[in-house]
Image (cartoon, rainbow over all chains, first blue to last red; front, side, top):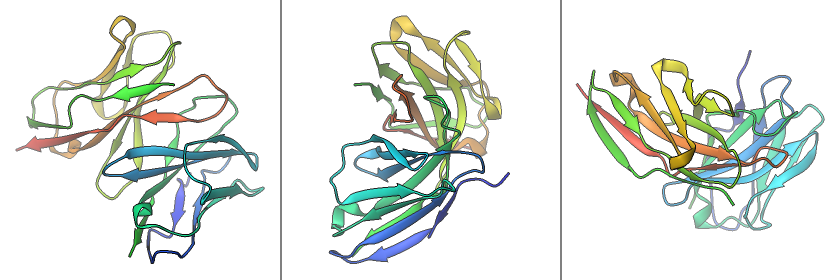
Length: 114
Length: 114
């Protein structure tokens, strides 16, 4: 069974630009969560999507948004990029039918802002 | 809100020695607890989970963890460390709200001496 796939693996952008990251969950998984990982703040929860609806949201500004498609693939968008947005963005999937199921993570997208 | 602390930022052990990584959580109800491992440049891999029942749980790669409610702890152990265990280890807690909203600890970096 294929794992969680995130594309692209690396991305370089400049301040003020916007970016879209993609995540393909494990087949059959309906929940997709996004996390931001930085050396200073660690792993922080961004949001979770289940059946094309945002089910949970972390404490990030509105510049961070996401969506989920009918095939459970998810995208995350960050607008008006800031230097502090440089991070590893991780996507995780789970079946999603009940709470607190173990999440399966992708290898992440490394976003660098110049 | 739930929180997780991992008191040790960095631990160094010799190959073949035993290992214990500490994790303390703050949560009002019965927690859902997880340990994940992250190798450089990769995503997180689930080592083990605790939901209820037996307080000693077995995971992959020879790891185990013990849930102690009285101490709000969920420490990870391994009787004999291998060089390939060098990585960063994260403890996480989920709440009982419907969905996937994990709070991760800051991580403990494990170095293994030959």
